[in-house]
Amino acid sequence: MGKPEVSAVEAALVEQQGASFTLHGAGVSGGIAIGYAHLISTARLEVAHYEIPREEIDAETERLDAAIEQVRGELVGLHAAVPADAPAEMGAFLDLHLMILNDALLSAAPRELIRTRRWNAEWALVHQMEILVHRFEEIEDAYLRERKVDVQQVVERVLKAMLGTGHQPEPPEHEEDIIVVAHDLSPADMILFKQHEFAAFVTDLGGVTSHTAIVARSLNLPAIVGLHHARHMIREGELLIVDGTVGVLIVNPDRQVLAEYQLRRSQFDLERQKLKRLKTMPAATVEGITIALQANIELPEDVGAALEAGATGVGLFRSEFLFLNRDDLPDEDEQFEAYRQVVLAMNGHPVTIRTLDLGADKTLNGEHFAGPNPALGLRAIRFCLAEPQMFLTQLRAILRASYYGKVRILVPMIVHAHEIDQVLRYIANAEDTLAQAGIAFDPSVPVGGMVEVPAAALAVATFMKKLDFLSIGTNDLIQYTLAIDRTDDNVAHLYDPLHPAVLQLVAHTIRTATKAGVPVAVCGEVAGDVALTRLLLGLGLRQFSMHPAQLLAVKQQVLRSSIPEVELLAQRILRSEDPERTRALLAKLNA
Ligand code: PEP
Ligand code: MG
Image 1 (cartoon, rainbow, N blue to C red):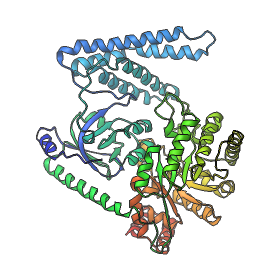
Image 2: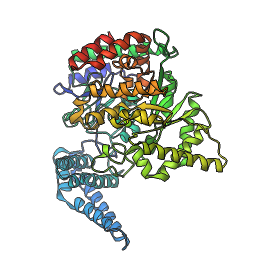
Image 3: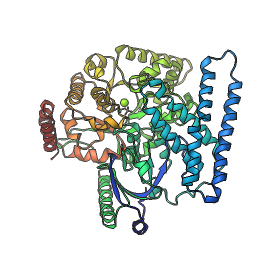
Image 4: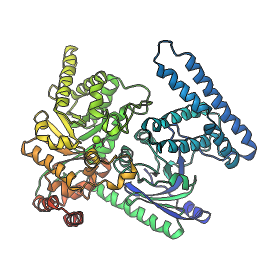
């Protein structure tokens, strides 16, 4: 991505700017970006934000009213078409949506905003929706709280009805000058961002290991989450500085601050450039022990970045991202093509395809099956085992792709031994149907399990007897060990990979697997955290899988590490009972 040459414009903007202020959040993707705020809404449809001329206020209000009327007609029509024998919930659901639509709370306030603030109808409607959603979120009763989804769905219908009927503002000339400012973004939204070239993004909500943050890292964009009120404090077009390394957002910087960050940005870019020289160098420690540095990818097109970073395989292909942002499910052929594309591109290097990890924050379009506590609900392998057809389709597609290279199957979130038994039976079943149809596949595809729940780490000795390899998913392992929802910024400050319980579970898993000769990797975000590379090496880890953007920096750490040295300090960190001491020892390890 070319860096915006905006210095002169930036300077001009500084002259006419509003008051400067700074916000702090969690930096989730490093680097510095300087650009202009572009506010986007939480609605799945991106909503334009512009000011309308005074003389168009009436027309704009009518546009909103017409859309509401159209949706009312649609809902009434749908209601009439509900078959007599349909479940009662169907009619009740449409009644509820009609009730929401008819409520003055949804229509009166946006009219007022159009009139007083001269906002376009979409923006006014989404603004009011967010106020209502926020109120729902504060309700204690879980059922009522979830009705916020109905409000969002009704608003999305109205927005769709308005689509194409308003003025669309000129798209900004250079996308790479844009800093996206949102209240919240879903992993699915982030995937859509892959088609754009924004400079950075910042959100009010979100945690460090949320999938939103993970995709931001994969985009190699500076990003900050958990800023709380940024979306309401920042105005469209304001000049922003995003320091994604430390989580600082500066709004309307003065000349001096701007100049300082322009310099820092150049230094950061220069460092990244320098790292590129390590691309073809084998990743080995000082004494020559080879360390596998593999890539995490979300979509087949990410494989380019993996190769560019010199990854020696794909350690985690989050296949569920193929299922997001669409109304249908990818069929066997479509999945097969996607997997095969990656396998061929990796040219003999292993490609670890994780079976669907849907649920929690990654839901299919329009589905809210996750239950009252999504992270503890029907997600990952639990969901797949509850949807055998979907699972078998995926397994057949993966097996077909195995014919074209080195494929491994990775099962997310195992907790019970019987889940592994069931998976192995499904794989055998998929192999049988392929064999019967005369379709080629590799008959010995390794099957591995993700250690993401403390139960799996503690019982790893039993589980690994049934598996060919293991991969530690520290994002979930930390979430479940420390009881912190990884998508909730209210508890994001409690995220701590150095917590003794986390370190013990990781160390125990690596030690047990290594002793039994079972390959073990770490594929959570800690694998790409350069501050933890030497600690993981010291705990015996020899395989890391991370977003390609982090790979060369991790390689730099590996190249300067000597195993006996890092082992010694890692063991001391493992024994440490005091967080201060742990941090001091880690600093020593990294010195
Ligand atoms: C993890 O949990 O660490 C992991 C790699 O899986 P995901 O982040 O996709 O949940
Ligand atoms: Mg996980």
